[in-house]
Image (cartoon, rainbow, N blue to C red; front, side):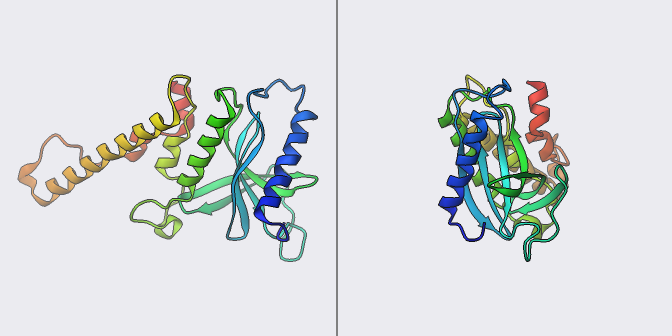
Length: 223
């Protein structure tokens, strides 16, 4: 893959999955007919090309090695279905190994599947683009895994909720920002209390950001 430009590689991926949609997936019954295929934000990061692939049946974070397994510098080919951890500025993500003729070895991290909650391709692409911004945005006061972060950022977890028919992506992100502001205010209150114990109120002693943002799958189950 190292001899292809990002645009050429994106076009190859899109062409491959458009063919898969018309053939292997055509009669499966989980395709959203309102959606197409789009490879979003493909870029080189370390030893992989990374982007988000949108199809009528899934939205996956995709990792494609610059040097394919089995080639010089590419290491030993993995077992299909095996997992591997990848580090991005926002945290670490587990990818599942797969192989497609015309694409080769790659690792996928599922964000959405199936895709029936998306009303149109515009909404799916917008979600993918915002997700990429979050994935490549290091948490404030930290630079990804250099700060010891061992999992996806809470902001990314919060954004990865199922889209609602009555809620836009902007509304979901606004809600995230509001919760972040609330968390920051509580943290500041804790700091003031720690400095001046006589100011202690009912403010929580410890702020659990996971409780504020939650995991995507937990939010889905509650919804």
